[in-house]
Image (cartoon, rainbow, N blue to C red; front, side):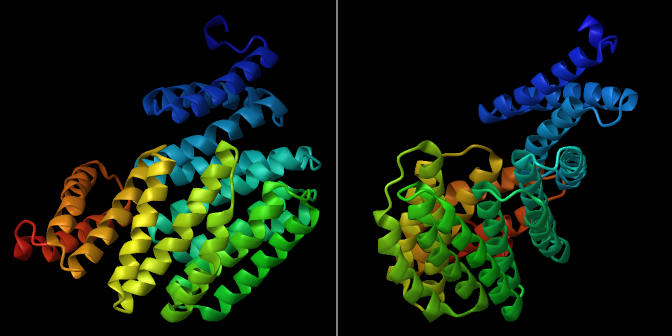
Length: 365
């Protein structure tokens, strides 16, 4: 475009939007540096267009479409302050977009996605009050946005995440209120989804999965195991037939089975914890790693699995699991810019390595 000059605003906005799609394509294929470079170009051109013509719809869309995936990428790279600034730009852009086009359900849904990214960043930063407020703010979007399966289903997910966060903070009443709100959203989805669709088949089961995670976080370990054992066969019988539904199914397996494993571990039922962690790792392997965040999640799961093996008196299996994780976490700590959650993951890996008889326990602990 003539050296990125702004002689033609329509062409410039088109270039910015095309570059925003490049960001997402590069990220999908793990080309993170290319994604960031395309993002810088898109944001620079979009900002210049908006300076000349505030409210330019295509430039706003380009800005929003660029900053949402870019913020998720920066978060996975443990650059949380930078990621938070970036997702705030995405939120402002989508808010302005829906102000100008309030009937656009897709844009309302994308605003919800930016909330999701922001709350995850705030949780990783340890800003739990802010994260809870962000999860709650999605409810205001539901009240203003056109009714749609995407928006109501996404709002249910946000309420479930809020329930788990409040449970982890020991806020039982708030966790139960969030679970109740999630159920309201999911009931709307079930009532309005086509009979036989994935929404219609999966959401009643997912609605029973999340309370297991909440119960475990609240310390109700026996309840978590009992509820988990009841819903697990129902979840196993689901048959996802598309890539997106397959991923949802596998993530639901992890959401269910890791809290079951943790509850069993606390109760001293190491055999059950071992079986459940095997299912967690199986699901994670099937999911694959889209970014560093997935790698870290898999590493933390293997850390827990190694601890269970050690408690079962299988130190060699424990060491086989934890040895590469310690190396990974030490490497990540050298690349970590400002993510405190990674320090916790490193500490957990070193602690489990000591329990498994690996390395110098005194130094590691």
